Length: 248
Image (cartoon, rainbow, N blue to C red; front, side):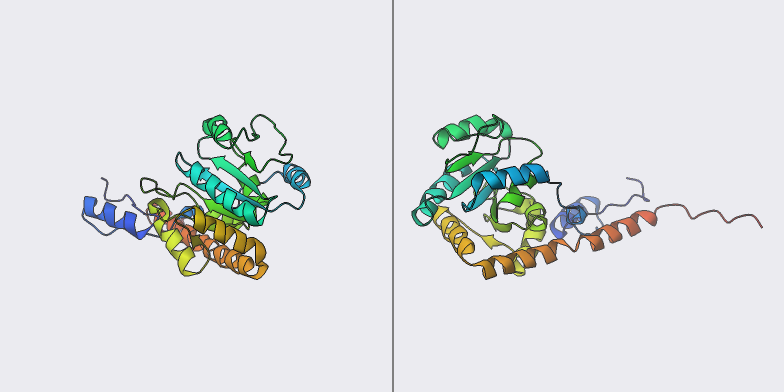
């Protein structure tokens, strides 16, 4: 590797791993995903969804993997004991699983088929590029890909910036540092099973102060991305040749 190359890591764990391979310390300026703006949300589509669901309480299971859908559906059944008109939106990590999840949920309507939500208790958001839309719709979101041991978590920055309270499973290796900061700041809640998911979702729906506190803490943590971006730019600028002095 060229001696002038910069190797920068998103987090300390990655920096340690790369450092062990290359035999030198690696800087970890931070995850640049924190510096990304919130995903764009189609305001017209959001308004249409809000009109369709009315005052029904809604939560989102985002980026689910096989084996997690059953867990969130069980949680939703428990939630419905307290909130009979509750709506669960499941956004699979791989949209091609939409039909299978819809069947699992009793032929639930699907976004990709342009189905109406109507009075269904479950809606499958199996489209590409609309996850931000459903984060903006749901006041509470489970960032899935984190409930089973072989999974490693997904990006919590998007729900934080779109003001959806964050739940996560315990398996978040891919975003370990970000989740550690969120959990330390009380900007996210770890859930291990359907019972815990149901309890926390119901609690956050019923306690606006607790939900707002969670949202504020998460937003503060994920708004620190500017520092990561500045450190990365500084490291890259240090590799550039000094500008030639103008001739006198």
